[in-house]
Image (spheres, rainbow, N blue to C red):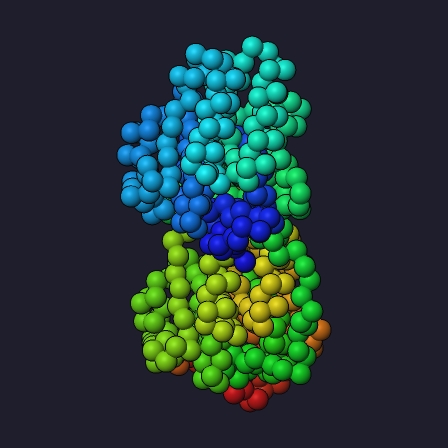
Length: 512
């Protein structure tokens, strides 16, 4: 994502950076210079922090700012609460940024008194940014709705001529037809949407004159850096990439029989879903993919939510994969995140930054669920994953993503995320089957778009030498039900007798 919040606008630049990462992306470049905007939201949504971020960003670019309060938080308390924010610089208070109270002139002389104070302060300080915190209190003191509209109109005209960009902070308004919204150049709404026992902070640009904006709700969080906004992935990356999978270029796993099933490996720039029950070997199969790529000099990235970096390295060593040397060489990057109250769009933004930074060619997303589970709109998943998949392909990445079934084994396979199968190019199924009161691992290639493959079911084992795939499993029926039983003796070919060797069922003749 290209964010313009840190860019320094020139005097002739019609746009003014907001100082809020991600917000300028929604606004198509920032506030319009001299524009007046209403920031609305219930208490606690972050209006005051947003207003101060804007003021300090203006000061950082050499401008002057005024923060005017009307029956809002006292200046002393506000400064105390802002001191923990990275954008706050105390030395600028009273010099380039002035905090003033407008309640006394409002109480004494009404809206005209407040207007005179604002016009004088903007002129005397040469302010290029103004934040009025407490617009609802101003409206309450107005003699009539017409008087309030006249106040807003006068403020918009004066500050536009002065080149002073203005933010008006007010409480939540549910009436979109409210006259005050028609008077200003834009309206931004901050909200807190419930999601189970937690809430997700959201921002929406409901109106913006003079340019296009990214509509709809977008998540944001508040930290020591202030507000950080994460535009919806499907809205930000809505275009189709011109890059298509290269059918002549195959990426191998380094597992001979499995690569044969894939007719040489996965098609470059394709996406693959490794779908299976817990413990079936999904992560280990993906580590084989990264190790094989690193052996050929292709940078790989593991981005997961369960296994830590050290556990992944230990797991790889136990099966004969020396990932540690590739990590030290910078060919494999292991990134693990805790899937607790995550923001999907924030994760995607971080993922794209890592891919670009390290020039990643092979990517493993170990767990699709954490990307989606914290979204307030459950219907987003197909659009979200389509945008994610297209963007990764455009970056030249071949992706493996894992998804866990809801059951360990049985006749039905249930997935937490529905509709993924139509978006992903390839699907590899790993599961357990029961045979003679024992559990065996089995894999199959359910789907390969634009490529031939061997769809046969294969047993595989995991040992100190890694994953070993057996020949086609012909001695069982009803495999897909997870209730495999030996075939009757008269259905076996002459001379073929299944035996157990190293966790695999092999035939005495023709086996490997």
